[in-house]
Length: 412
Image (cartoon, rainbow, N blue to C red; front, side):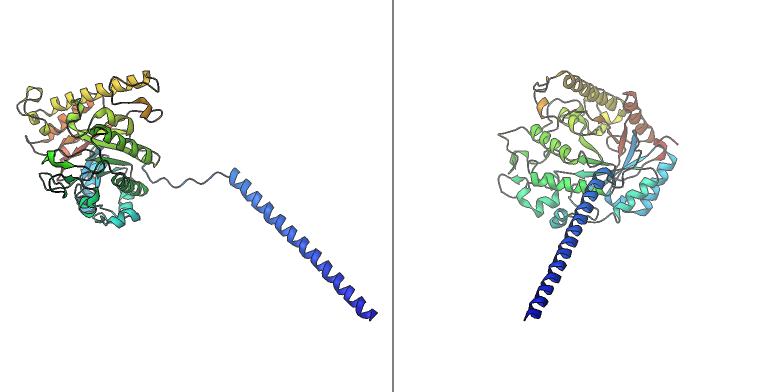
């Protein structure tokens, strides 16, 4: 019996010692884990984070001289080689590529569930990221163009966001039978921002927004909006809210932002009936791009029966007025306190981004025959008018056929 007790005591002693050793090892292990995690945390704080690879062109040219390309052209290797050749032999150093036009289709593949769920992808541009990389290798600046509120596909796919006809309750259509989406809809805003983000993710240098406006032709008196409330704000104020939303959601994404406005926005002080007031755009973009096509100015402008025949004069006058308006706003913003307003009552200082830097002016120029034959000499006069007004950030050339005559451009 005593031997049995001694054996039990020995077993207890052995188990006790083993327990102590186990607990000690566990404690050491925990200390090791703790110290390792502590070291890791300290290392994380000391070691600088690795910056993601910058896909945008670096350095980007300050003066961008770009040509417009449709989605079909951008998806055509032969056309791309033609543009690369143009860039090698002339002053052209940029392209503006449609990635969403007025029909509402998105021309490149995307990982976005939002875009995929809408079903708007029509990948005319295969391997868009590779195209951007290829153009960058040729030192060509890449901007993409997004048509915003004229959007036939989204209006028909999601009619709850479409502008309606007040008489029929159906989708309202303009004189070209095209549909528009409501400029007051946050869903529409987020959808277009998502397209911009996806393009930026693939390395584009600039996002150019077009059709940021209300409809301008058709049965305007039958327009009905579900989200834009006419009783609460003007069209111009509604667009300013969208400008601010774009700026806030895209300013840190690594690409420049630009907006297209009617050419007459440089001159008229009203909103042209479509919500476009140039002062509203200046605080929220890197570039404001008035479409100063002489063919689009009415007979009698500057006392010319046919303004299209006077490209230099029309663009010179438009640029002079736009610069003056930008300068006036810049002066007033620099002088005003945070609670003040400018002489333009629709500009509220408190609503502007901090350290506001007003957009530069980079216009669209006409390279198509309308009102007059736009010879290389006519196009060169347009470009000269831009330079004569001291605008050094460049210009975009618009030809819907994407045909650009080398004779209008300076040789490199």
